[in-house]
Structure formats: C-alpha cells, structure tokens
Length: 235
Image (cartoon, rainbow, N blue to C red; front, side, top):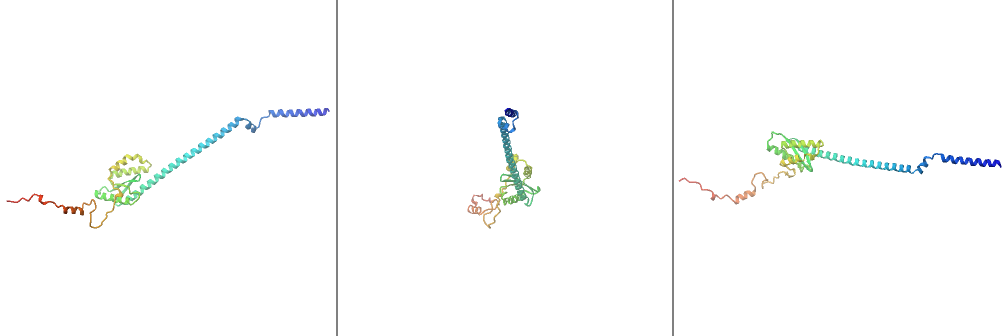
C-alpha cells in the first residue's frame, strides 16, 4: 500500500514540474508571430512599403521609356530633315554655274541659297537661278522652294543651315529667316513653266514682242494724220 502511494505522489510531482517548466519556457518564433499583433502589423507595413517602392520604380521606368521615345523621335526627325536638306542641296549643286548651295527647311518650304561666281553679270546669274529653280521643281520636296543667288542672303542661309545641323533649334532664327524671305524676289519652282513654241501666234508674256491683238488694234485705230501739224512751206 505504501508502495502505491509513493508511486502516485512521484507521478504527481513529475507532472507538476513539467507544467512549470513549460510556463517558464520562451515562446517559439512562430507562436510570437501568430500571437503578437505588433509583429503582424510590421510585416504588413513592410509589404506596403515594398509595393509602393515597386510602383514607384515601375512609374519611373515608364517615364524614362516615354522620355527615351520622345528623344528618339526628335533625333529621327532631325536626321530626316537633314537628309532632305542635303538632298535638295545636291539637286541645286548639279546645276551648271552653281559652286555651292545651302538649304533651310521651314515646314514644307525650302529656302535655297546659291553660291555663284561673283564676276558673272546679272543676266547670267538670273539664268543660273532659273535653272536651279526648274531643277528643284521636278522634285516633289522642292516644288515649294524659294531660290536666291544674292551673295549676302546665300551666306546667311548657309550659316543658319550649319547651325541647325549642329543641333540649334530653327525657332531661334525666326526673325532672320523672315528678313531673308522678305528680301528675296522669289523664284518659285512650281511657277516655272518651260517655254512652249506653237508656231506663229501670240508671243510669250514678257518677251516684248507685239501680239496679234496689238497689231489688230494698230490696224483698226491708225494714227489720225489730220491732227498733225501741216508742214511749213516756203513762200
């Protein structure tokens, strides 16, 4: 009987010691995470920061892409404009008598300056300018070109063309281009028409030759000789 009592007491003592040990033991990290609301709140805050950081990075990435595309489009536009300027300049340079040519594009209008020999007379310079305008008229991009062979204007056009090729905006030369165009007597390529010889008939406009209508008027309305003073006679 005593033996059974000793065994029961021993078992009770052992069970009470185990419970006390479990109470003093430190909780595991999993139990802390599940039971501590501060830790859970910190985790949620960290996720929110990470999400916002990801969104900021994505937004910055998209903005950089837009800026990169805008810059690329500007570069492509400048490259295309410079190629078109060089194309029109090459057309004008192929005209006999043209030593050099410069071009500035303003929308769909090209201002072309010709460099010719300064010792040529005005009639020869006019012929060269007409030939250059006619050559530009045959190109779809040069039909609205304004051509000048004036030495001063051609030098100014050349300076502006070089500045634009170096990356300077064309808007910075607006006043100067307005002055240049205002001083040019435009030789518009689209207005150039080759002479047409249809045989006898009305002469071309501006040649100075009388037309059939003028000859007809002279025949119908001759000068009234009766109104002229009679010749004096000697007595």
